[in-house]
Length: 140
Image (cartoon, rainbow, N blue to C red):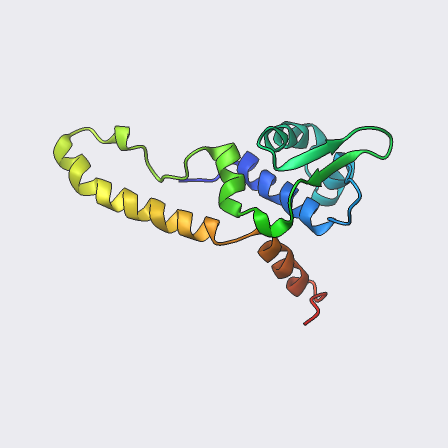
């Protein structure tokens, strides 16, 4: 399984919104500049996240986007599933014979479980905290 660019950028976009979660909307233009990602591409991603109910849009000159919920309410898995769909390493339909499917399905199921456990165990708040530690701004 490979996470698409859209999936990676969705996590980055949500992390940016969580990092700048001051109660004021964040403009997509500012996110694009900070993250060096095309604003047009971010528009496609924010549309998916908005439809999923992860962000709210504020119109007008002081408008932009905000997280609908606190950062600890979003996991990396929730975000990735909006862009990637299933995080399973293979589709069970890809197996050609019943014998192979019954034996190898165990592998794919275990892999999917491990992937889900990791991505569902990491919140946006965790990412913000890790980011602050990395840049030396974390206060204990």
